[in-house]
Image 1 (cartoon, rainbow, N blue to C red):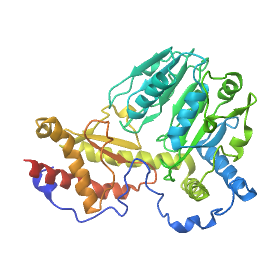
Image 2: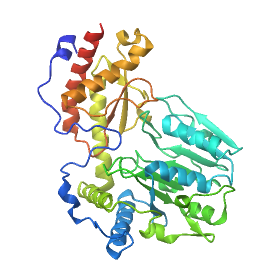
Image 3: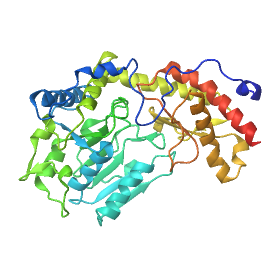
Image 4: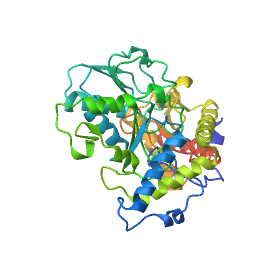
Length: 391
């Protein structure tokens, strides 16, 4: 690609310029009218309210292919709240291995070490763009990991490293993987995700799935620290079953519930989980094809086998860029993202604040491949403008 072509202003714009990695784009064809059936003005504990919540739980389990004996519940504070609930409620019974290769995994390390202050903690880390050695997991211990590193674009390709005969629990933050990647449920004891990621729902609501092994831990182990009310999943040593049938711990937004029910129905309409994963795979492949044809941009995750199909993280590979001072390198991707936002062709594509300087493009199933293909020439154009201004 020549400098002259890069500098040419594109004619075609994405129809939907929403490429944020969370909250993510709404599903294609979404309009506010889909919310008209929401149980507004009704208690979430009313018969209609509980029916919608129970339907949401059941439909999410079915779409994800979750085993029938797993419990799925709605919890407060998005995926972060669901992970924190799991950490505070389940850890401490055994030593724990924590795998971290991006911002959120590092956050779970900090919480376990500095807040829970557990003594027997092993941290297995990798830099942004790489995956740590997951085979270091000791099945006699508990394990905490993210399935897909939203801020690094790195995912685990499978859970083969988890022993079938493990004694510990595996706690998996799957918020940018659920509905887009093939989760190996028998290997996972606790799985958390939010509505705002892959399915384009609204923020503030999290979900937590518990295997029978996780339920057994909850009913047999009492943490030595106080648990806030919004973290309590048991009463009198027994699981509070109502949480998994629509009796949520706190008050959910019925408007957001209606929105997520619509997203789940849309997911079924395009072929269920296979269709959702295929859309994300196709979007990621389109980005990869553009990257491979570019002389200025590359993947932050260089190993294709561990590269995310949802949160695609990119870095500038132009030799000119490498010669710039560090503060200028940090500024360049921000200027690209700002320029494209002003043009109305891409919103929220800057890299995560703690990640290396770069761009991050959401490729999940609610994004249309045609919009990505319309975006690529604009990215080339914006880089050429920023480079010319800097030079």
